Image (cartoon, rainbow, N blue to C red; front, top):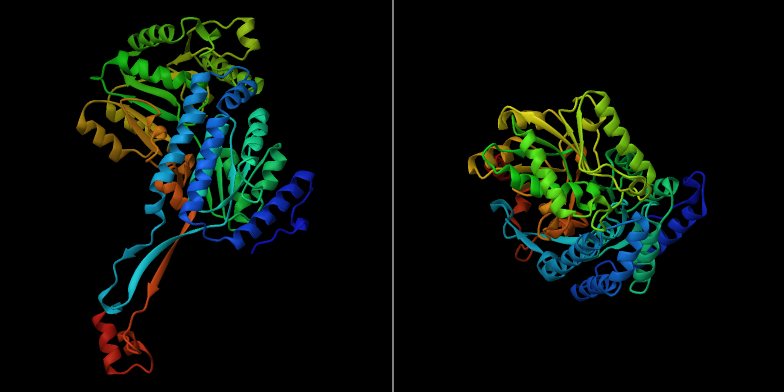
Length: 483
């Protein structure tokens, strides 16, 4: 059993001691129950679901406090409904996932038998970002609990109300040696990452993900990194541009585009920019009759991020791009950090808005000569967490799927891949690696143990012919096996 020596953690704080104390308690508890039964795990998943359902109003209120203004329906869908869907899917399929599986056995090893058995890893660390704090925490917990583990969760310092609430509601359902919730600033996150977890899952920026992976490497802790990137929208010239605008607008304003899989920029057919802009404006007015003052339009999480978005727009404009705001923000909007959907037409490819993940309602629009040119554009950049294609051509769909890399893809819509409880969610390359959700989430937090059972009759096994000293029969047998 791994025990943490506090002397190994430099600049110790009270939080460090709390992390270590809880970690050691969870390790000990796991040692005393290394393989929770199916019924135990289902009871735990139900307790997790009930904690969400019984406290939905408090969750909405807490997220409203953290964001300043958070659309209630978006919170219900993303933080509560989607989380419950992931829990229910795991509970429903858990019996099948936990079963040992028979694998084929080579002729020379008969009558032996091969199986694989999923085994809980132990104590799991989950580092949660601020954009969907409840959903990402609960979805990670659902996968980890289904796999039979114990969990420590580090919440973002940007969502203190959500952290406080989640800590309270889960404390009523789980002992601290099973699930525990922590907050704290960047130094606390660094100390958390340095614990010798049996697996560590991080969701956040690529930059911070590198630090987390470095810290985990010192303990040889396996990691799952859910990062981000610039998720492109590719539009085929035969697809109705008004439909593209309607669906992309939803993704670009949902949670004010503070979503790791939000459409980041659009590659549209040459000559379609003006029409696309007109339809985006029309649909924006339909979706938000009261403009960005609407309660359905979420605020930017804090002033630092609001200022960052303004800086991206100002730099793009200085570099020669055309800026189109769906609405000019008033002092009241600015005070509430309501950032209007802002189109950036023909941006310089060297500007920050085309290099950094935007993470807000800014939408660069770039014209391309063809779909082949769009594919080349995407492939010349880091592999994104998501890719969106609008095309009814089966041939083109297959071409894009086969010739590009992305963590996930939605065709003729946006962000739907994340809402599928049966689908894995994860990145590739700079957008991360590893998956959670669905069966893949269970597998991520399990060790799939290979087991070989020798079933020779009495003392006989054909493999004894391979024991030294090697005679003629042994050498012939090895030769027959391909050696």
